[in-house]
Image 1 (cartoon, rainbow, N blue to C red):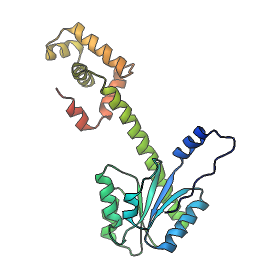
Image 2 (cartoon, helix red, strand yellow):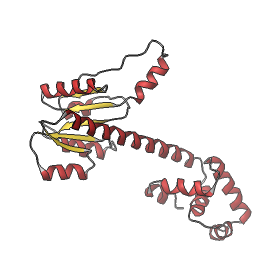
Image 3 (cartoon, rainbow, N blue to C red):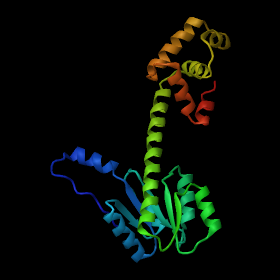
Image 4 (cartoon, rainbow, N blue to C red):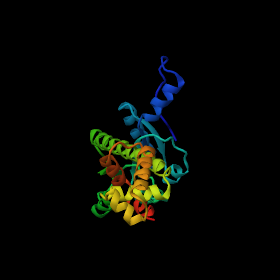
Length: 230
């Protein structure tokens, strides 16, 4: 495996430099063709992109990669686990890192399968440098968005975990547009108690309005919302 690391500026503290590197995109190249892999590595370097290169999907899956934004560039046909199988395995493990596929032979059914599974692009070798770099830029942008959304969801779930079961019930009912009086009747508690639970959950979730509460609730995956049914 070869990696291209950014040089640390002498004016940066170690913590600042580490933070800057963690936000730099990393392009992961998987191709069993040594000469092509090296050419892709050099192309990424010329574009100012860090790379991690692997000769097989087995090598990639066994590696401990840094948690950084980026995308995969993978050959479709490789000995052992193919690029499409790699895509499937990553998705099953919850890793949705965007993938740009490369192939020496145009295969429409294969490209349709890859794109349906979320691939950024399906390019035929030899590919123009700029076409590949454009696809990689799209993949990196997609990954940054996915990572930001995942971080927001993580923060929401952490706040949700602070609520009592009754507060989660009240949260759900408020998000559905129910009034305090209706919630009190449905839950068999007083309206004053509903107001207390509502105030507590708004404080714990750091919310200032019902509209914020509704947006947060609707941003949660359906399985999380159903899990909080009591």
